[in-house]
Length: 571
Image (cartoon, rainbow, N blue to C red; front, side, top):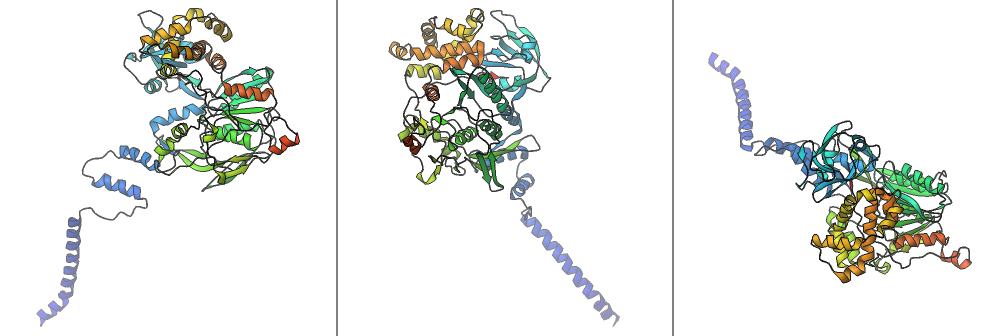
């Protein structure tokens, strides 16, 4: 009896313990059988995937490198202008638009695999240290940088650096075999975005804007003031080759030419409601005639500028159809120093057109081929080859028809100029031999050339020198065979470029552009229009009513697209 009572008491306990033990053992062996194949409940799938790889992958993985490689692939599935900027590149990417960077204050180029200083920025660190134009940098911090095929990018990263830091340079000066050593303390080096401003013709100011950076507007206003003081009352703004930059800089520049209340641009995106920007009426050139020069490289902020001028019928656009970038990027800094440059909106010209050309998400390669395809299609040579989208017609303030969907079509189309271009010319340009000769000639004759007080004096002297003859001999020594017939055709063009580059080595862009552009028929056409007082677009009705004479329409002409402008590197 007692035995049965004890059994009755303990039997439920034994059963409960057995069940619990069975559950424990079952779960234990189920876990062993499944390994770590469990469900992750992370709210972010990418984080979950990375966690799984970090915990379970067969080998040790550098997760930082994995992430750095994955982010660009994610961005490659977006539009062509959204990009990831690694931390090591962020500083250099931003410097071009920020208006200054920390460096030694020289422009340089690689001459036969040696770093040659072309110019020393006045008042900069190198001038204070005693460096001179045509000095050759052989060593940097006791490491040899001559004759070892070091890339331009590595040289720039080495010579630039933190402000007030010091770099030791071993310099070869003249023909001396002994190196001279200089300790240069890095400091702020300005980055210009208004390359040059000069009086192109009586009363007509020419301003070349290479990008829209942090200091562009101030540089532009200074240029306008100087040209006005020189007697200029109408202006040519050259945006050819200008790939854009800060939208605010373009807006501030446009404001100088617009009457109060005129719409300049508006932006709109999924997370960004429409935002309109209007001229405030404080501009200093509201009544000044204006012509804008564009080409297929003019993009983004350049298109905001030219689109606002065109849609408001404020002036004429001359040249070739612009690039077609109508997407607005915002740069978002990340905690490790890297950044996202993310497309957040589209911008629209005053008539309501978005001039962004077509693209397919994740197909950047096709997008990048567009300029080449336009060239092959003949667009650079004939306006007739450009097919505008009739479903994207818009009206300017005066009622003229303009088109969206792919860049700003100029009011006056100027095809590329091929006069003087031969296979010999192309060879000496593409090989860099022409630029190399200009450097060597400048170095070899620097004592004589340094004696000239103005670029005009030097230019007159150079026109009397047998540059073409000595250059063709030099080119032949570099493997480019003499072709007398072709040289005869291209001779004037080659001489003009040699003269321009030699002058630039002593007088910078102020001497370079007036020579380099002296035969630029796009610029000549702009000057002609301003002289004739035809810079204000007119409609067919206005022309027939006699209100304004000299209608400006899309016409044929000759343009300049045959040279490659060689740039020196600034550090």
